[in-house]
Image (tube, rainbow, N blue to C red; front, side):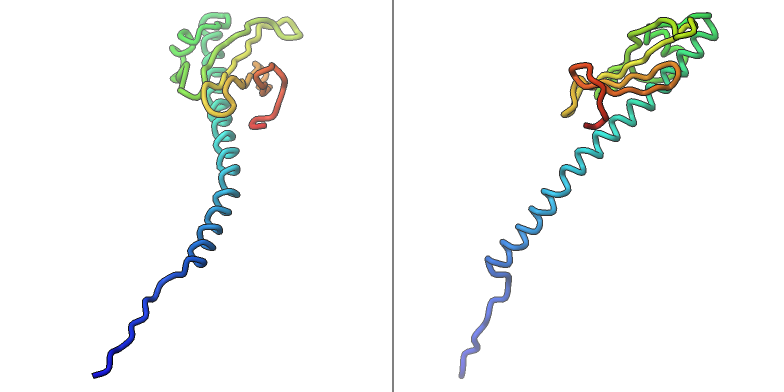
Amino acid sequence: MAKKTQFCSGFSLIEILIICLIIATLIFIAVPFYGDNYEKSMGAKALETLRVIATAEGVWATDNEQYTNSIANLQTCAIFPANDGDWTYTVPALGADADGRPAFTIRATRNSGRLINYYVELEQDNTVSFFDTGDNPTQYPP
């Protein structure tokens, strides 16, 4: 009786290395896009909360005839976190605008990620500014 020769089918080492190289290339291209999109979403999250705080500041001023720089006071007017793990929210400036009317500035400072200590400011007139750690205006994310 004659023996049958069996062949093992599968991938060669070269084929596996080429597939690994293709996957590594795709990862190398995708990771920077993921990081930038993540930072953009963090910036959008901060802007949304800043706008909620600005609305709360308006409600507080309507009820009390003045603005407040106390986040605890503003949390009685709207639901928002003072620190959400990624950003810390403060009202660092109360003052007057160019016409002498009362005005406020709300700030979100980044607590985590690669842009730690960057901050976003929302003025009463809805002007949004981004700053780096050296208080220089910048784009977010840079």
